[in-house]
Image 1 (cartoon, helix red, strand yellow):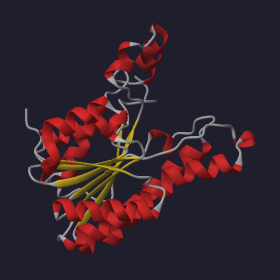
Image 2 (tube, rainbow, N blue to C red):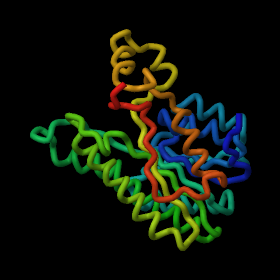
Image 3 (cartoon, one colour):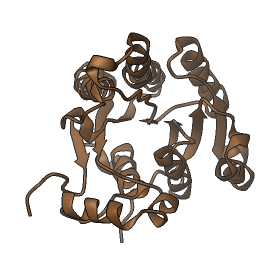
Image 4 (cartoon, helix red, strand yellow):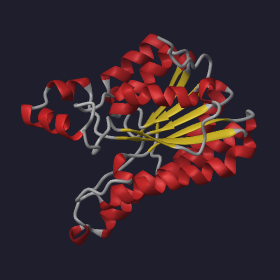
Length: 254
């Protein structure tokens, strides 16, 4: 089987301790990338990240704690990447906040926190990564959207609106950054879960996903991350301005 190679590419992964981000960090390192992993939590809060830091060392893996909704933290992140690795080739952005509530019951502060965590973080990280990539002659940005950016779901107005806006931000960024040699795409996953969570799924949960998807199950993190690896690699050089659904055929009739 052919895999997308990322040899010597410097890639920043935000939300690096989340389900997608943690799996992507390991996958991309295995493909030869050098990774700047960032999360609002510290690395010692996650055994998997601590193991990777020990296994790969700081030549290949830099961990930075930061809040991607704060521009000062975002600016510091990219300064540290430049100081440590000397360049930036790619961004895989996985930060979001979801304060679930119905529209009638949503507190304004929860709405604003969700939009800031989902949309503003994407704007800030795209802005600063683009500036870094421009200095190195280009690169690739992959934002993470969601099926809920296009499919309505109750108690998800803020999250869904934020993800829909992430998709339009991705398209605008692709247009604006093309002259700098920067490609910008987004992935819109459906339901996905870690192997640990899948192993604990009830029969009812398993049956629900069997009915709702053509594949008949929830996705696994690296089924999404493999597409991100392709888009970040040289093999994805003709892809930009696109939103890629990875949903297992969610909602399509059999």
